Length: 313
Image 1 (cartoon, rainbow, N blue to C red):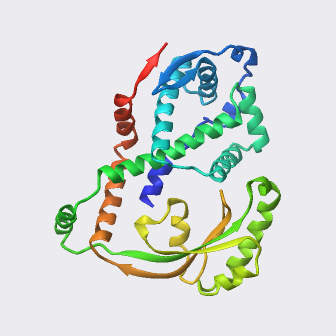
Image 2 (cartoon, one colour; image 1 turned 45 degrees about the vertical axis):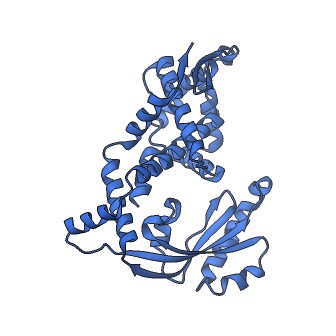
């Protein structure tokens, strides 16, 4: 949960001050974006005047100060983040981006179409906003991966921590999991997603154990079942962690829309485990909690910027 909370904190947070900020934004002329030239190059990645003007409009929409200079600096940071996300091969599913976009619209008492219109009138775009969300989510994962990599505990570190905390090894729950995917092709997502979600909920209600899932799936179209093996609590995927922890043994989580279609996770079995590897994971989770308060994302970005080649024209 700690890793998930850190990722959420690093992701999309109060991007617009209020629904009033949305309604009060003035429209910008598209003519001002007609001419575009390269203004900055970050590790061979260009940033154009058009991008800067769009980002300045987005900053205004967020009631953030600074104008074009602040927009330029934000785009430089974003370029570095994108490159690091790509280097770490982090992929944020389109479904997660669409979900965040829809949730943001709802929080501001707008439909997605209305939010798209507001962004367009402000001189920005729905695509630009979704790209921004993707970077924030990907950056959150990159920061967590970096912290885990740089703060990895050795066997000696684990022993020292155990002695410091009373000598006993931490205990965690280990889950035996099964993944069920109701496949939805991308080109049929809008027409099939609701139906597949209904089918997944129906299977969830009938789910009582993992042994019968393969047989049940044979009677369903385009359904994939995978045994995921045993996963310790600190290693649970952030997106599924809370649902898995709140699901009883022999039951399944509520379905989620993903890039593959609609998925749910069956909790086949649980057990309590305690060993050196578990101790290392538990201590690292505690370190992540403490690290989150120190804003590790800023330190990480600063180090990447030191190594980057940034040319302003």
